[in-house]
Every structure is written in structure tokens, then in C-alpha cells.
Image (cartoon, rainbow, N blue to C red; front, top):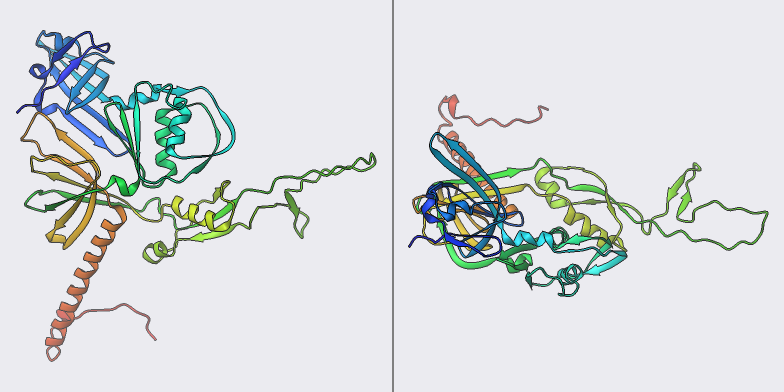
Length: 398
């Protein structure tokens, strides 16, 4: 059954079925974890009310979700009048729910606390609701200023590693990394379910070594009523042996190293990390290790021929026989043509590091097998003079 697409005037005054003027192959819904949820399509002028409603800030209802038109680009070519439409999910309208208050100082917040801060404990929500899934320990935030619910979502994904937000119309779900993954036992076989698998590994921004600098001790003042003495020294600084002033940190700066990453990729020293929140070296080390990009950024995309839909966060076993690769991946992107059943879905997966390591191990096994085979051939021909079967090792001549 063809999906019904509805266009609705912003205030709800008019509502029309849009299917008749949509070019079906152009109607695409694209979702990417923590970054994008939009639809786009081209419509032709059939002189209908539905077509005339394709203007900015009017709403499109498709796939059970509501989207807001943000760009509409009419094109006239001869007697043909078309319009290219792009609409973002209504969840992103949370950017207009704001607080104009600010809080000076350092405060511990959970995601719920951040929502309450902006919505004034639920008194000013803009029609949005939310639900928290998983365990989130408080994180320190300094000098909270004016911000929106959209800013809150960014703070959450930046501050709690692996956290995810998703929209269901005006309902916002916040997921911990473990709660976001949903294992339904699905398996995708290369050739059978897909003929296109692309794995991209990027080590451009790799860093596994950094110097960590904590906050400095607060300056203390002494009460000296003597008029003939002045003291311009700052007790948060100390004098070095050469007379220069050095900062007085709450604990000594130190170098942090991700030894697992170093073993795989070599030493990759990067920029210093300034940590004003941690009160001891152990916490600072954990924080620094979580901030460094010590593993390659992985993108794994695949087309899918099946009719069934994928869930956001669904765990999938991907089996790619030509690469001897069996790896568990998580759905973090879905791109589908809702009105054209002949077009395949494009699924983006992300189990980043483990997927990369699985492929790396598969490659190593292939290399080992090739070398073993080469050595076997050399052994079998050891009594002959077949030079083409020789395996050379490069080493130091002593």
C-alpha cells in the first residue's frame, strides 16, 4: 500500500493529500544519528491546493512523522513548473524553546537537570516531552548561560560518551550508549541481502598522547595592616629555580598515553588537554582518554534489498564472505525512498573500532595464509632452481 503523504498549513487551517503531485523516485527520508533527520522531494504543479501549500514553515506528514518545510525552490522550464522541497523533522523546532536566565559557578547536571533548567521544570516546554533511557551520572558544567533545548541535546551528546537523542514527533528520547542498541537477531549476508558494502577508516585526526594540565590553586590573600609592606605576589604561582613564575596546579601536569592505540598505530602526540573539572589525577586521566581520538573514525555503509525496516540503534550481524568478515554493527543512519519500492535502502552502520579490528584481523589472517602458502611452495621446490617461488625478507645485514 502506498504511503499517504500529507501537507498541512502551519496553523492547521488546511490539510491536503500530496501524493498526486510528488515525483515518487525523489521522495527521500534521511536520518543520521545525532545530526540529521529530514525529507526531500520534487513536486510538479498540478494546480492543486496541495501544491500551493508547499511553502516555508508549512508541515509535511510522512512515515508517521511530522516535518517542517525549510527550503522550497521553484523551477520554471518551458511549460513545466516544479518545486524542490526540503523539510527537517519537527523535533528540531526545539531550538525555539529557550531560557534567558543564566547561572554563574559550577554545577552538576544530569540530562534531566539540563531539560529542567531550560524548561523551568516543565513549565515552558513548547509542546515537547522527553524521556531518559539509561544511567547518566552528573557532570559538572560551568557558568550555564542562555540556551535552547537544541543546545541541551548538544551538551548531552558532548558530555556523556556514546549518548544519542532521537525524535518521535515532539517527543525526545535520550539514550545511553548501551540502551540505544537493540538486538533483534538480524543478519545481513553479502550478495544475498546486499551487493554493496563500503568501509571507510580515517586516521587523520588520530591522537594517543597528550599532556594534561589541571586547574590552578585558588589565590589566597594575607591580611597585613603594615603600611610599609606591600606584597604583589600571587599565591597561585610559585617561583622556579631560575626565578621565573610557574603556575601552581592542584596536582602536577602529566602525560597520558593510550597504550592500546600506540601498539596498533604508533605514537601520535597531539594538543594539550586543559582539565578544569577533575580534582585528582585519576579522574583527569579518564577524562583525557575519553577526549582523545585514539581510534580511527569508521563509516560502514550498505544497501539493503529487503522490504522490512530497520530500527534506529538496531544491532546487526554483518557477514561479508569475500573478506572473511563477521562483525556486529549498529544502525546509525537510514536513507530510504518512501514512495519508490524499487529503490533500495541505504543503511549506515557504526561499531567503529570493533568493525575495524575485525577487518584488520581478517586481513592479517589472509596475509598469514598467503605467506604460509608461499613458504610451502618454496619447501616443495627446494631441490629445484625455481627462483620465482622465493620469499624474501628484508632485514639488517650483519
